[in-house]
Length: 639
Image 1 (tube, rainbow, N blue to C red):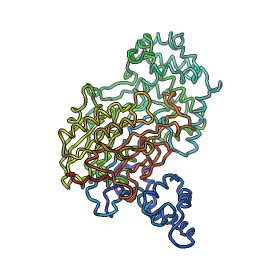
Image 2 (cartoon, rainbow, N blue to C red):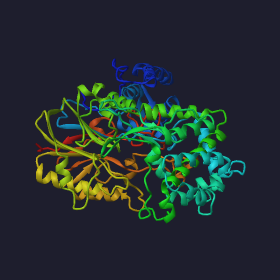
Image 3 (cartoon, helix red, strand yellow):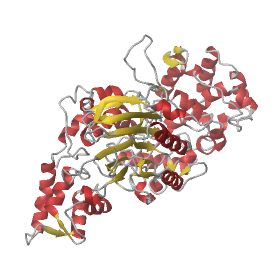
Image 4 (cartoon, rainbow, N blue to C red):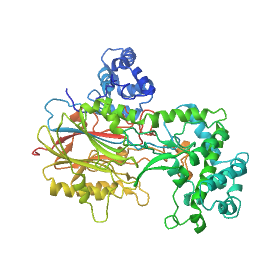
């Protein structure tokens, strides 16, 4: 039957090369067709069906499918069987089930043409580009990656005397003198005092600290932000053209292990020459509030106010600029030395390049590919944390012919995290009214949203229903989520009473929550109080709602947040953050029985499938948030 919802068939478009797809995506042309994938499996199953009934025992088939397709867990296969129309608790019509599975495992196709008044929706926090390719554990089975990350973890967790040497043995006295001369040459004040009291003297004695136990793992340096602050500013600098242009140059990366810098880091000497050149000699065009400014990275650093970071002393606050430069140089030097120690043959740079290819340089292309091939028939797609270059890729994609792309009025290219909407042209009329400002005006006194985290529109469908649609990205702790829900509900009641309300959001809710985090139970309670339901139901089991599974490695400045390899799943951030909510009196979630497949759908593979206990992003799925999709039906009597 016809469907506006997700289809599982991958398709490759003739414009692939023109739309900037990389060699990685060209390799995807080898993706087998559904028939090519199913026939070898069906051939095996037919041999096992010795009676020729077309039936196989359910538990046996689960084991067989898992053996043939290891990336599918037994639990996910069981869930699919429960959602299909081809299995009971004992037997499965295996030919129909396998065909259905590979044609589109969670396509949510309408079971008949009489199921009218339905709307398909999906929400996805595509995640801002991560500037550190090593920051989070990846579900990547390359032994080179796994061995490297475990070696780094071991070196930092239990440093030997041979590795945990004084700082001056890695960042040498000669290197310090070169750094000192460069800072003086560029007019940075307080350099000699930093040398006397911080490099050599008793205040910080940076020169003689052990590189791991007394520098990298020193919590006081972390609380003073002497490493994380300069890293945040100089890690990846978003540059612009000096003259007005639509061209967006690639970012400028500080020579470092923990960003997407792909220059020569094969020796400490090669790194140091590049690092000095970047920090002190490269003039970068950056956009500021006053317009385009030409600045060197060493002059981009900002003071560290003691009022905000009380761990820093008055002297350190006064000397914050040269002290940050010094600490950043030491930190980067230690990491380069660490990688050479753990990977003496230089394999680590190959591993880094592969990660950068998939999750940095090709992130936008892969994001678009998933939307083009798997979600191109959805009626509404709510997106969050979208980079400003997304629209360029959208315009060159096949989605541009079938979707309206609604951008926030104040597209944020600096923070580069924007909420937007994709609306099916076949489902909606062309007249779209941006009502974001009206929602923002309804926020409680003293509560303000971050620019571009919300986009909301009023629009009519071609069957003359009116909709109020909003895409929202909550702050890290979820503090703004409940105020946004209340403002949206209030605005809908007062200004848009005849509109059908649907919100797709990254709520940043947690279960269990830490201090100041929004509890998922509070989110659900507030939704119920406002008469809202969710794509997971009115009283959902939190375990069905988890949409993240990410864990930090040891290769990032905040070592206190690192999770060991063996704990990367059990101690990961596995929280129920992403969902779709709507008015209970206007819409209802169709049951899997009505749809004939799972509803709602969670997807962390880009293949319409959710793998529990798998860290993501992955090479195939470039976000740390799952996609959530659902098929909703209008409640009788709604206009």
